[in-house]
Image 1 (cartoon, rainbow, N blue to C red):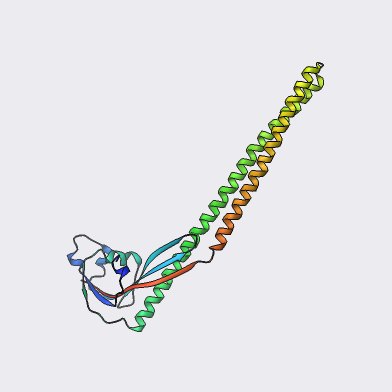
Image 2: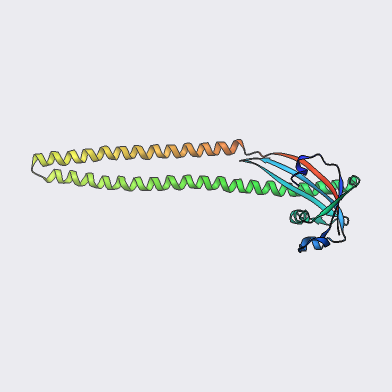
Length: 223
């Protein structure tokens, strides 16, 4: 399949020889004696990141679909290439409909995953903000209590030198308290900036850009 992805392939036939396969694949075993059509497309999706998916669309001649896993395992079985005509228009339409259903499922999965990523990142920022706020507010309360205690001691102490020393300590603590408040405000501003950056990044990539390419279409048969 990797080589086929880089080649322009015309509709061909492949006869898969399951009876010669050394192991057992239940999904393929039930296809012995059946035939149908299979197409492989490459879907490129540009959203929060760029990714590619290989999507199969396949069915047997009775119109029963083959799921992605069955198609992937089919290519684990050895096969022989043979000539085949192009699929009928009705088959092409049915394969396209199956691809569109698989495509919608993939896009929904990517959208859901990106939504979880966004919520997780926002939650991390909010938890960080809350933890930071609680930690600094706890320190500020301790400083407030210590400042009040120093001022209380200075008020009742009769020694002027001691009063001055206590007031100096209280003043130094007040400076430290002001610095911690500024740290809290700066940190909150930084978190809000990070939130805005995240939201803006998601907004710019909110609309998924998709590209698709048919890699090959084959007439398959399992023996």
